[in-house]
Length: 594
Image (cartoon, rainbow, N blue to C red; front, side, top):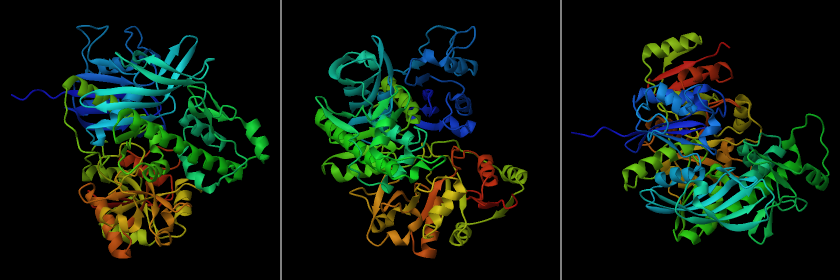
């Protein structure tokens, strides 16, 4: 008789709050709360927890992740449960009658934030052993004497089944503490039985430096991707002080310039910087147009990626492993990821986790619990698709009912019909299958356009209500990628984690998706990964000779990616996008009367 499957749910509580459900160690779904609630960066994945009931009515383990103790989540009146344990109990997913105060089904991993980032990356890398590097804003918060400690960068040694051991950690403190390296008991960060070296200072970590510059450029500190898009508009500027300075512990951030406010963002010391730059502001001026902002963005990108490269080399040296997995918020920096490929020794191989944001800690928590309890030593293949959302099985009646509510026209359509629209300079959105996990759209929740249109970037940015400097991605047939782009030794790039250089003569062929520095964030596509999307790109190549389609996320500026068909049609209604292709159903939704 077959044993009952083991169901594990990982819960990430923070600004990328999410739920990951595993069945016998395999991902059933991984979803951010914002996709369901439609509130950007929505915390507390309560809506997503309800989705567990669509797959199982019982959990073997509920694993909770965050950066602070579970008590900070608040409690349910009278029963005293934290909200996640309480909701799971109310839904019948766990049974706490036998031991209501401390049930073994509920595991709190909130003090293992960086370990969970590392677990997500390591177990999805396909590596049997690896060094892990986590570069994050503010990981686990630990009270220490009269101050707090915040993990910022961590190096771990990883092997199966569950050996993720911290070797080195950069730690920020809010209290008056001299810069020093100390031996820290592993219990501080959820790892018992050994000590590791921690470099402690009052300086901002690498991601906090990036957040400070992002704020100074006029964006929310959490919108670091905008600074990454702005950086190539800048240039080296000798009047900008170094963001990192030499100390007796190595490079640390320049606290005269970058002021951390842990656990929140950081800010640029405007008095010093503005005096050095002598730049006055007019009321309402777009900061991204100012040379000093652009040049500071350039300094931030180039200097932070050098700091991370040094940490990768340190991880190789400390562990002896030539394979390195990278996670934490900085892992989403596709410019830096490409930079590493050109600057690491040839025998060092990296895997950059595509769900490097805190959404990945839900997956990391669930996976770590699986390997701890099962002793499983199976090395899964490296992840090459991210379609981990829910499968919506719409019937013809469902689709007709939804389109009718939006006064939309529903017609039969094929890939060829979509290419007719795109080559006539129409924007076409595409909705199919499971949504993508993480922040990248990979053809299931995408907006498509013609990459050969010289005005395409400005046109789509205006329609999506994004800043003028924001670049777009390209999805290319895997078999054609090396003729068009330089992958620096990679065979493919299926999860869109690298902004790569064009081959000579390519830039003028696809101006809509080439950034000002001659790069493009690309996704390689083969038929096995996404047959409908592959067929569209193939049809575009047959029509135009170009094996690439313009691809951007299916959302408007400031909105989460669409999750349901209702979300998709709402986006059409609120924008100048007229078309949504449903390839699984062979249908095209047209919404023109707005």
